[in-house]
Every structure is written in C-alpha cells, then in structure tokens.
Image (cartoon, rainbow, N blue to C red; front, top):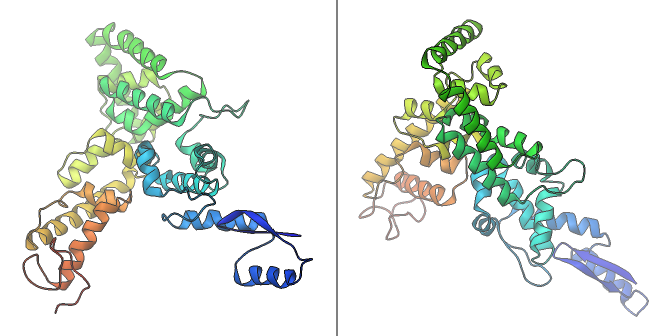
Length: 361
C-alpha cells in the first residue's frame, strides 16, 4: 500500500500495489495526475497555489475563501496592516482553504505560519506573551485598543505624534500589559499636571528652552508648541526624534497639503505611515501622484465621464494599497485615452465608456 497526496487532495488515499495493475496505476497517478508520496510536498504546493492567486482552489469539502472575502471579513487588516496586509491575508486564505474552511486553522496560519509570522509580529507588536506564547488579546481587541490610543492622542492635539508614534506607543503599552483605558487615563493625568497646573509663563519658558536647544542641535528651526510639550512629557523618547530632525515636520498631512493643495485626514496619514511612506520620500511620491491624478481628471472630462480620479490620494489608493476598483477605473480611463475614443464616439466601447481593446474600428 502506498499513500498518495496532491495539493488539492491533502487527505490522500492508498493505492494497493499488490493488486493487478496496482503499480501501473501508482506510476500513472504520479506521472500524469500530479500526485506525490510526500505530504509535505503536496502541502507546500497547496500553500503556493493559494498565495499566488486570489481565486479559490478546490478543497476536500468545497469550503474556500479569497483575499477579497477575507478583507471583507477582517477590514481592519487592510487599514492597519500596511505593506504586510496582503501577506497576512494570503496566509489566512491558505490556512482556510487547506483545512476545508476552518477559521481556527486560518488564524493559526496567519499568526504563526512560516510565510506570515514576521509580518504578524510587525502588525501586532507584542500581542504574543513571550513567556507563554499565548495571545494577550484577539487581533480585533488589539486594533480596538490602538484606535483608542490614537483617538486619545488626537483629542489632546497630538495628531503628529499619533501618526508617527501611535503604533509604537500602543505596542509598548501592550508589552507592559497596560490597557488602552489606562493609557488614556495616563495621558489625561499628565495633561492636567503639565498643561493645566503650570502657568503660561513657565510653559513658554520651558518651550522656548526646548526650541532653542533642539534648533542648535539639529541645525534647523524647531518650533514646538504646547502640544509638543505634552508629547515630551508622555514619551521622553520623543526627544530622540527631535534630535534627528523628524519632529519639526513629522506630519505627512502637512507635506501632502503643501505638495498637492488638498487636505489629508489623520486616518489616511496613519495608513500611509503604516505602509512605509516616510517624510523623506513623501514629497516626491505625493507630487507624482498629484500629477497623475490631474492627468486622469483631464482624460475623464474629455471622455465625458464623472471626474472621480482628480485627487492624489485616489492614485495612492491604487498604487500603494492595491485598491482594485480604483485601479480598474484608472485602467479603463487610460485605455480609452490611448484609443482616442469617448463615451459617445470613437472606438468599440461599452455603455460606460470602457474600451474593448486599443484599436479603433
């Protein structure tokens, strides 16, 4: 008896080589049926198939999922996962499909799988207890705590600190087994002591001293206000950021507005920083996206479409976050532009103005 497996048949089955024609059947299944005697080889092929395509593969009981479906089920992954989001989702898909639709296996693969464990540690920093290996909370509870921390910081005017340091602040709190509620209480306590109990003259004196010191150290003008003083009180480590010249213009939103002329809300800033966009590269990135968006808007007007692609952030949604709907819209507009058609005249087209091919008839 020989056990055979395949990427879409991980339960496998026995081939009785002692029966007449058994050896021939075994060889045929291995050579032409893509079966193997190695379960590990079949499992590896199954994982690769699931990761390389968002289309579901067949499982033993027919239960499958796709990347799109997982993002619908776990929307916070796309928002906070940044550049690691697809890796986590693809591992979830692999675990789900390979187990025949068991969510607990899908989560285990996402958390501890070979292809995703490093990404998981980055997105959910310190969620795993180093002593026991158990999760301190669920992923949704982790994200809920992060959102509370970000909301707390924003409420006290620390938008820049929230966008740059909010995730690491929450990760430190989780490492120290501090709840989001306790963190919020600590911020309030420090605010009341630092801001409310210190008179304006003393506050200004402290702020001016910091500004002078950090300006001399960095070689660039540093202008901190009351909120920055609170940030320093909450997180003394932020002084290192100032010394490296990052605090002075840390908000990507300010760079985005200065480059594109449009506003960028805190949520968008958090998503961009989570995806790895830094202030050093952001101006060029935003300028290129803005130029592309303006060109797309002109194309839409010429094609008598509604102008939906005029903002740089829309282009970034497609380029950085892989928004398939926007990417498809951009593709339709650019293809129609290349063919020189419009909604009412030109090349072969659909009722929405999308072009079938690039040749006019």
